[in-house]
Image 1: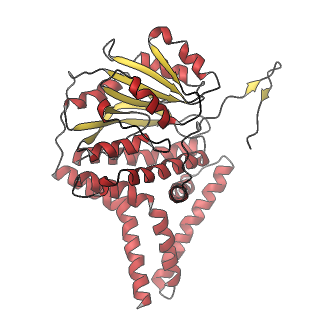
Image 2: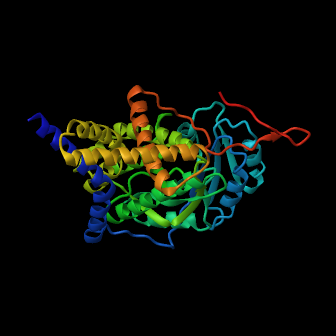
Image 3: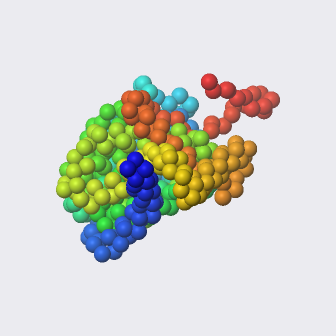
Length: 402
């Protein structure tokens, strides 16, 4: 009986893993085709917009971001640009202040409190009907704001998510390519979720909401996930707009992407606990289906894989399970080789894709741990390396972090 139970658990967990990565995308595509959600939009619709740019020590990129915002194609006088500095000390504030004569506003937090507290500070001071949230390194295409805003002609739409794309720079070959592949799947899922019902979550780089739907959040809340959940709980839906494009850089290494994902996943799980009504399937069944399949089950994949491995070891009396264990060990060996190669600045797709898969699932595991231990951080660090200063002789000066 014990073997039967363990064998059943092995097959059940295997089915869940397959469902998350293959079954759900196939089923979602089918449902979106058979039961599409009507999407209303109008290029003639316009509204007052407040573009909120969050920044902490972004002197390297904030000038380009502000110029990009000023050049966006939107009616003159209807686009408000606000940069929220989380107590930056690298010259970010001075660069932003230099654009004050062109209408750019700087709001500075006097203490390092994090992005969410910055938004709590800024939103009451905005004059836009629509709020667009962005990051300092997210460069918008010229028509991105128009593409987002046109969906709000539909009174059922509470938030609109744009398309953040990764651009590769020197030193980002492996991490950018893997993150790019991961993001292509995410983008496709967002499109299908939007077509079927409601896209799950926002994107801190480019997403918009109705101003009256913003709710002040706790410092440890992740605004671009919790706020959309709160909006859905109020009966609205979210739309994905692929034409609203921005470009940003992936992390310079897998490790930096790992730390970013740990923080995001831990705070996203906490967001679901903060908005538990979204877990009621009868409230918004289409969004519930996407939330559970796309997010919750995927975040718990590492736990499934650990139990799956344990079950496989117990069932080694069978030739089939010996082969299954061998394949698992081979996959993890490839991931380990990918890690070693990445440490040496090298990459081979056959190795770094398994490595990236393992890294993403480890991030989920650590995110769960952070949630359970209450160690969620309200602040963040940029994933870009600061340019080293130089002394009078032109020799770079570097600081070691401890």
